[in-house]
Length: 343
Image (cartoon, rainbow, N blue to C red; front, side):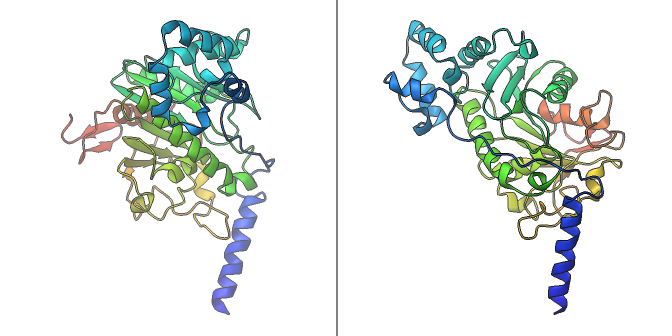
């Protein structure tokens, strides 16, 4: 009976958090966009292989066998497909998405690696030279980010790119359906599960085209996506910040060979969210807690829930060091400064 009462009390606490107290706001239920890109039917009707049945490495091999003229014809005839094929050549994807977004001022002059207009829209934008960079970073957002509302994500990617001295190619990846507001969708894992599969495939696409394993920076609900993807995600580092939990009890529970880092500033309202998982609600242990096992990232001077990439902050300096591959195993980052043996 006591255990039953404790369970009811926990359920009541979680439901209270989800329905409007301690920083949570209402949100509208979202339907995750999944499957292959828009235009696949027309692509297959032209006698081309179904990309939904191909791995990114198979897609890379398919394009390798095409002549430059054939690649150009596919880009012109099927821009919506070519622009979203993980494993397709980077420059072709840029060209295809430029064609799809022609006249759209939001991404004029940008290197758009993916653009899917379905639902609220998804997009991936690159800062730097993705084809030649020795290091790559991917920034994964939390709630309320989509193709129409990507400014804050693009700003973070640009801040990280500049903090690395423009030596790291940084991808702003709004490639999954994010929650709207911080309500039921944000408190459950459905959208994150769908996003995790898309993130894994995106990283496989980077690897197929010869990019190095990235450092992946996961904010808020985006860290839930990264936590669920971790066991398959081709990443060198997973860096979570402002996280409500990774749906794992500790680093070992993520089943990843990537180094796992965690940051949370003292003013972040995410601290008010209960770190529980019960009846599908909540995302589990605090990754900045001492028992979780993540490597700490200093964030004392970051402000609020969305300030980890602010120029001059300890967190951004630490993020840049991780992205550049300057932090060796055994090193500690203190105040944004690496202490220990630096590669």
